[in-house]
Length: 146
Image (cartoon, rainbow, N blue to C red; front, side, top):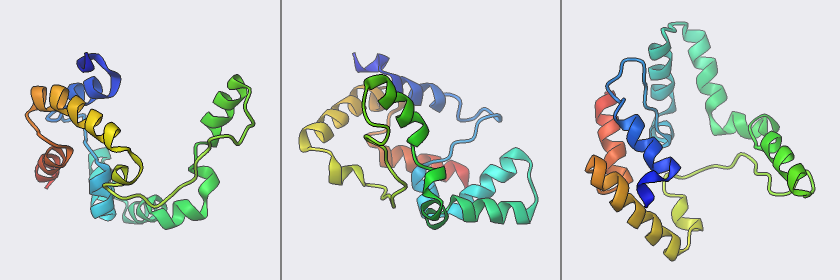
């Protein structure tokens, strides 16, 4: 069943580690909402108190910087290997840094795929962790981080 599928089991296993002092949860939603706060959390977790380095990390983690230096952040290295093995041109299927939205999947997933993901969520994450949606799980993480 879905329980044994990689991502879902991965999420469940890491959720069980959320109180481990050697584990820090950072979400895409949190970074979109307040990047400097999240970078600060990572710095604190790592024991870094160098304000200049934290400011540089925040600047370089922003979409504007990553887009301006796109080749350093795209998936060309992995795509080159996979495409070569598959006999495809080197640039086939590579992606560039794009502005994301928290609900971006709603724009590209078919209703059948959204329904499938919702079913898998209910049978795995909701069943094992009690969260009826990703938003509720993320809200719990945000509340725990503050």
